[in-house]
Length: 235
Image 1: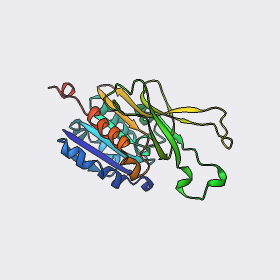
Image 2: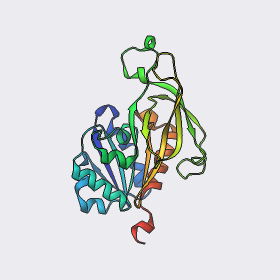
Image 3: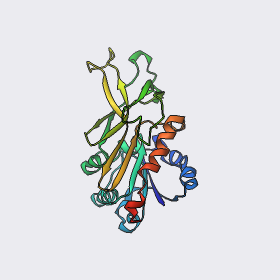
């Protein structure tokens, strides 16, 4: 099996260090790992045709029409796509074709009360619960996992009905926020695209979150589940 890690974009999500956490796991499970520092590889038809799993960690940044077309085509042909946090849910904001592929887009992470903010990224760290859905309780990516709490950025994402939501998180309506009732947002979802499988995990802002046992389990299981199946490989 061949895994392609594509990383880059905003340095605040530490794309190099975060992806390196998962390279040993992939190699231990029999993957040949190739690492690229930009999405330019997506336009290489030969490389993409031989890739079984794409792990992307590219926050914001830009993608060209031929690159996103190559990514979409590879997934439709059976390659898996997965990633976490802004590396997949806040990538290539200007590309509608990319957003349609992954099915969800980061829009905000609510902050603490104004009087508690000190001007750093910790202003956006909120304790919140990640709740496994009924579907998630039986899905291979999340089966057996209990609900769990995190203190980190709590992503609010826009999504569509093709997403199979395995876990959610609820944003409360606090006095300093402009919304008027709690909002439940997907925290983990899967998606089918042609013959391919997609897994998006929204927690993962920092290395300590990625090493949380529940988060890491979801990401690693997601890699295995998304990988091109033997049937898709033509076996």
